[in-house]
Amino acid sequence: MTSVELRNVVAGRPVDGRRTFPKHSPVDGALVAQVHEAGPEVVDAAVAAAREALAGPWGSLPVGERATVLRRVAERIEARFEDFVAAEVRDTGKPEHLVRQLDVARAALNFRSFADTIAAQGLDAYLTDLADGRQALNYAVPKPLGVVAIIVPWNLPLLLLTWKVAPALACGNAVVVKPSEETPSTATLLAEVMAEAGVPDGVYNVVHGFGPDSAGELLTTHEGVDGVTFTGESRTGSAIMRAVAPRVRPVSFELGGKNAAVVFADCDLERTLDGLTRSIFLNTGQVCLCTERVYVERSIFDRVVDGLAERARALRLGRPDAEGTTTGPLISRQHRAKVQSYLDLAIEEGAKVVVGGGVPELGEDLRDGAWIEPTLWVGLDNSSRVVREEVFGPVAALIPFDTEEEAIRLANDTDYGLAAAVWTTDLERGHRVAQQMRVGMAWVNTWYLRDLRSPFGGVGLSGIGREGGTHSLHFYAEPTNVCVQL
Ligand code: NAD
Ligand code: 6OH
Image (tube, rainbow, N blue to C red; front, side, top):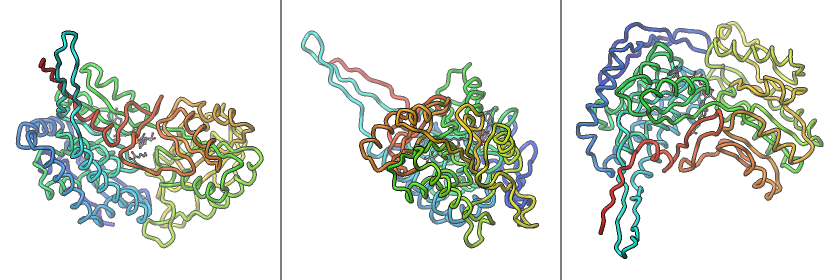
């Protein structure tokens, strides 16, 4: 594989960094890119370019025209679909079919969805009755936040980036984005698409680098940044909150999860096993919504364990373009070391490994990749660290329960609160249990089924705020309320 050179993008132009850092493929360790790390000068220039763009034509573009621009971005993503697929596969090592169906398809959809949302936005207005019989008219004029910093992780790089860029632009902001150091490619490619779609220079800027003492921290502590939207680990969210606190800037956080599935004996077993397999192992378990705790009604516990183990054994680890590949590597050797530490910890904590538990033998050519076996444990309970802490890998602990009340208590016994899935054919129970989950998103008989207008986010350690449809507009725009005495 030939390696590429990736630069920052400021006001539509490629800009060198203070140094470069290497990006390696998690498939086989090959060097895939040299990336220019943004230092203070580049971050300053990016924030200044965004500010300048707000003062230009972009700042006064009518809403309908902004929606048209967003639709053009979606069209250009589709026109360069295979370029995006290649870039995302190169950085992440995911199976190509997954990148096509999920990552790149959703990127285009994100822009279309927020074009629709902004075009349909009404005015928040009230006729207020006054004590003397007269009236006042209150109406709230939405205004862009200004320069928005967008910091995103490596697991669904383009999907999660565009999930924030699209509403930010829909509301008339200018953005400085910082993709993960592990996945710099698609954010850079998106800059080309922005230009092709007629987005003015400076509206979309890209700075590359790491978090602390690098582009991430330079952005969150920058005087010229008006708001920060972040997806990533809860601990990083906490650090970013501290960084923006002195300047009291708004934040929107989509953070980690330790998501539960609750499986009742009355579930449709085959459908449930297929759904659980997807929710535990999709993207090698590297989706914030992935299930890592499976609570199963005792009478079907053994059948669920056996059925899941069979499906886990059937997963095919392999190169992204290989026929039949279902599962890619973890994102990096560094992340694999973290996941391995939990595999070791599970044994120390008394787990019985049902399937997996180590590094697979995949042949010489993949030896330097970040491969890990899909893993299932039994014999753990909620007191163990592997059941409490987010692993972010293809792993789950299966735990039996006896009553509905116990299942709800166990599922909610966590500091996180992102997502949950309930598996049952009893409709009333499905609603009843889902509503009692202390999470942002609860699914019944499905998982990761999305309507982009729905509120997306978490409670507790899993985040602050909701994005999606009009919920995003509440973060990316700030209203000025006008009150007129009539
Ligand atoms: P991470 O928090 O390590 O990094 C995310 C981004 O933040 C990267 O771009 C990184 O460079 C940057 N960053 C790190 N430290 C920073 C700092 N001090 N200041 C500013 N920027 C900083 O997360 P990750 O390892 O890339 O991603 C995995 C995590 O993301 C998991 O915890 C997962 O659950 C979470 N996640 C959550 C959601 C959600 O919607 N809730 C979605 C995807 C991923
Ligand atoms: C976390 O890894 C997945 C987040 C998914 C979304 O934000 C989405 O919009 O589908």
